[in-house]
Amino acid sequence: MTPVPPGAQPSASPNDRPLRKAIAPGKLMIAGKWRDAETGETTDNLDPTTEAVTTKIAKGTVNDANAAVDAAYDAFEEGPWGRMHHEERAKILFRMADLMDERAEDLAIREAMDMGMPYKDFREIIMPHCSGLFRFFGGLAMSAMNGSYRSSYEADIRILTRRQPLGVVAAITPFNFPLALSCSKIAPALAAGNTIVHKPASDTPLTALAMAQIALDAGVPEGAYNLITGPGGSIGDALVANPKVDKIAFTGSTPVGQGIMRKGADTMKHLTMELGGKSPNIVFADANIESALQAAFWGIFWNKGEVCVAGSRILVERAIYDEFVERLSVMARNAVLGDPLDPATMIGPIASRGEYDKVLRYVQAGKESAARLSAGGGTRTINGKGLFIEATVFADATNDMTISQEEIFGPVVPIIPFDTEDEAIRLANATSYGLASGIQTGDMGRALRLADRIKAGTVWLNTWHKYHPNAPFGGFKMSGFGREQGSEALESYTQYKTVWANLG
Ligand code: NAP
Image (cartoon, rainbow, N blue to C red; front, side):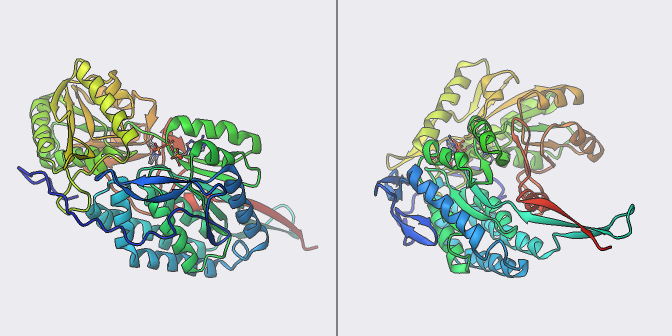
């Protein structure tokens, strides 16, 4: 992450906002063809910086969703994808990775104008990770997925284990990190030989449109990759109900995930649930203070806090509490808010009006609580437009406050004091979530000891926001189950078959 410059000023907005020719705006991709929604209806896609319309998005219907599933089902049953030699599939995944890198600028502009993610962060951090996922899972697809054993009880018996694809995977993805969280599902699902129906979030579908074209251009057979846009409450629900869908790979809020689990039970869906978080960042007095401040700042304010693993509760040892609060507050006041296409921008706009209003309700709850507003708390605009919320710090917070327990999903953080290691771990675990966590300390023995006790799927020691295609990612408790990335992810898109052969 770029160090926070002292005394940074708000950045100016560049006037040139070049949405590269949107690939088939207002269309769905079903069976390898771009087509209109059944009703011809579209919705406006808005840029959160200018609040202007960028393009039209097809408003798919339940019939469209079922047509996409039929295409994926037929492609799985009849088509070459699932039966293709895994080396051939791997080559196509590698081609997708190369095409993504070639089209990186277009993808970055889409993400900036759709989700408000700073262009520079996307190019430097997100893009290599996304194409890396296709290379990683393409590589895994080439490794042997099957085994053969001899029975130790009967000499003539051979046991052949086969890992086979599940069939049709519906990937339902959230508005934040649209490309990364789509790739983390689509790459392993395709690598294992499944076919795909992708349903991106209604607020941020632009990179999903580009990815459907990339899949087609890379040689994924028609029907093996389908894209359907429209309201989650109807078409997402239809995907979950459809008996031809074998797995729902879901990232989103915990309540929607719970609804999918309930409904999915009717047709015995395989599930991966990547849900919400309220991740604790524990800062001990013996930490390198500069490094701890950077971890705390970027932990919460990267991508304006619209990050499931944001360090959204900071616990600070009392001996350095006042100094830490003051210095983090200065950094927050100096953070550069601005157009995500401007390379100087550190904090872009909130992705949508609905999210903006929700975050401001939490800011208000913080102001009405016993916590002390130490930085931010207001909004900004550029030329009177834009959904910008200041980097906001609440000091003297307690762990039971609403702002300490609920997922705000914005650039807002409470800071809570603690006195002992045991108190820190008790507070860290006192939440229904268990997605990520961090420990900032100069004592690596303590860091590793506490890493064992924290109930979270990711623990960052003296850092924050590190990711790799090889590193399993997922939650404990109400943050969900199943893992993305790593070989565990590939396995979760397969099922075992055991074949017994009598050679006698
Ligand atoms: P969301 O409201 O739960 O929506 C997620 C997706 O589900 C969207 O595509 C949405 O479509 C769709 N959906 C809505 N209702 C549905 C239904 N009844 N059946 C099937 N699908 C439905 O979440 P969000 O606001 O987009 O994303 C933010 C949340 O995601 C936060 O809680 C965050 O922590 C979590 N998240 C978790 C991770 C992780 O890895 N654990 C990563 C990122 C985000 P529409 O957009 O059309 O409503």
